[in-house]
Length: 242
Image (tube, rainbow, N blue to C red; front, side):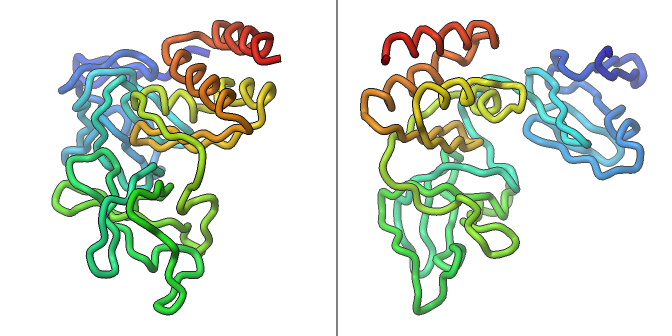
């Protein structure tokens, strides 16, 4: 089936096609068919129109989530995204967390599962935290939480051990894509724990340091590979470590 496309004036936009800053993508509002439309990084809504503000590939996730996929390294916080941050300071009851944006994010000590005034989480400067952005807009500093709407951690919180490395935002989106088999193939040859933040940071822990370094190199090298090339690389890695 061909990808959906529509014309707006003289502009024709196609999902999975290249778009440039300033392109009119207002057809997204029409194609949403009354359902809530969610715009991710690279897209913004101006009254009754949708405009691209980045150069890259227009992507879609069902039911109505659209974003621009590119290889930028500077992160712009987006509400609802999960990120990996480093605790850099503490001001009163709030932690300051570096998430790679223009300003640090704030993280309340009450934003952890089971946290109370008497039962405070054990968080120190330098710790790596995996959190979700509760607030993210241009007029306020980002705010992180390490629990879901039900008050449970759901895998969020302070992460210990392992190694964290920086990569492009496009590689993180590739890792998290349902169509990507990179992590699945790596997990078949070496047990691992992995957490990918939308801010271009990946944390990984394997049984040995050598396996962790091998997995980090494999993930980094896979950025511009096809699925066939990824499978070939993982097979060679399997032969090397076994």
